[in-house]
Image (cartoon, rainbow, N blue to C red; front, side, top):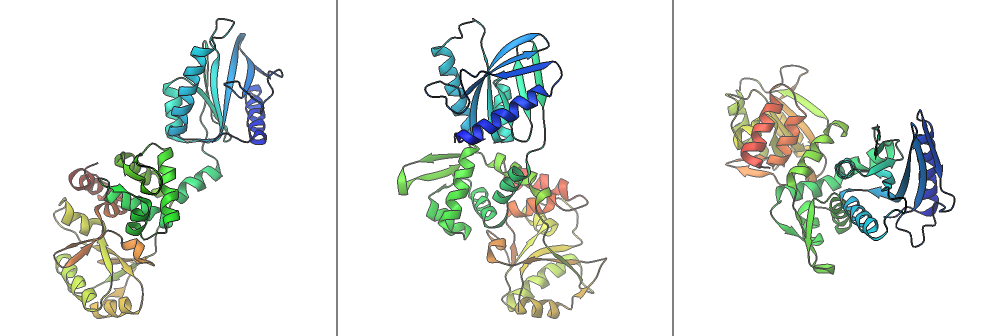
Length: 364
């Protein structure tokens, strides 16, 4: 999406100030081509740059935000423009994309093509002949918040659905029904993922369908967000006189008798999907809270403890948190995707177990 003229001018002014703050760098906006009024030009502004005695021409392309899909479009435009209008001096200008936010994948694409970039967070990449500027700064708070929102709440349920059914084609309505969200939420998530080039599509209008073409990239992105997502509340219990394997069966029976919805996760579930440990000493599960759950826990004879727990309950406040659980014999297990992400946020050998599960059961 192109930046508005006001935002474009602000970004270019910010870029000029950032360049001028660097040692032995002079930067001047070409006033003959004012920012924000590009007209028929292939670029939005031109900057005359001098670095340690060397002079360059920067041609600026301004966008509000840049994702891999946007960058591929920009690169195509730049190549077409370079072929159509060679620079009169005989020296190729340096192209630079400015945007309020640029995704990590988009930055990597630009670096691969040696096209410069600058974002509102202060990150700068400028690969000019004989001069190389690279400043990498953390993304802005607004960008972090925007990305985090995609991986939490009901939007995360859409991602979960796509990962679990990564071989399927989805219409918006079908995806919304599987993920237990509104069509508007499903559509928003699909639009965001298209920007990352993780989806392919077919058809048009109401019959349009999408398919997750890069499940590994999406799962890796989910992993990166784990540190920023608030961990759920844990309730630790000790059920006396019962080993973990017997306790697992007993829990399943008691919860079934009270019609309690649950999903076993972490090591106990991973051991069923892809055996890795010789034994599991603790059971962790998601449980829909309510009076029936309280009655079931009471029947188990579980008592609250701070240490030595053999049963840990993760509060689930909605059925969406139990999506895509699988019934294995008499037990309900969280989906392999959920178990994998839970393990990565756990301790001990959980991370090794997670990678084993991903290789042996998830497969991407």
